[in-house]
Length: 272
Ligand SMILES: [Zn+2]
Image (cartoon, rainbow, N blue to C red; front, side, top):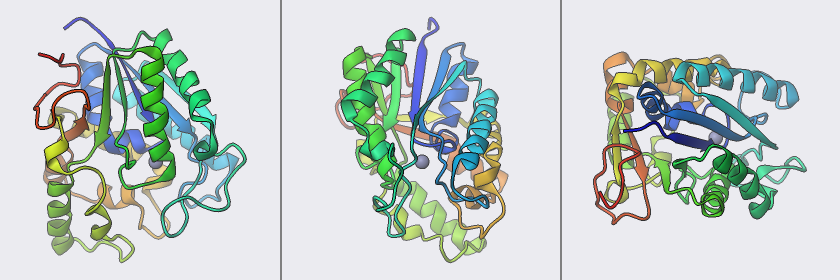
């Protein structure tokens, strides 16, 4: 396969490590150019540090470290404000003036499309329409990403997701052996992400799970300390063999191929 360029669009630093790190590391190892774009610096994420600019700077530094571990050739931050999450989930009432959720879709898409054109990207990775677990900035990544691919004529658009069926099974199993903090509720995963039948790509990334784990650990502000209820902190406690099982596959939905199609590689052509 001749080298191509794949752009991975994420909402906040650490989303790349959780959702697409294995695929990014695999594509880079195969000689493709991997570009990481985040919409925000994640300055309102949960951390020991107060939300704000300094946290944003710390999280961008963590992002560069993670990107280097995964073999990214370029990292860009669009510089929108992290919209945050209301305590009930959903859109927070108090948010910065330039919150990503309030950004004009057409304008934000135009900025991403400029990068796609400049890179002559073959592939753009975004999120499913529900934004995975529903963070407003993740839903916005879907909208903006879809439109950007239209504007730039990017041939392959993949929606990074998780096959929720095995995820919920494994979390239940893990919960019997490891004590998850009470705030970590497995039930929130039951309506998140995507059911197995709509998934078109199951990418085997077992060879890259060490890099993926290292990328997660690079996001130290999200992975350590505090009350320990952060998703990253919980996931980093999963021991090696189980980790490979849970994180050895990454899932994507490609909407222009029939549901139920099974493609293995993100750059697989369609019709094949
Ligand atoms: Zn996020």
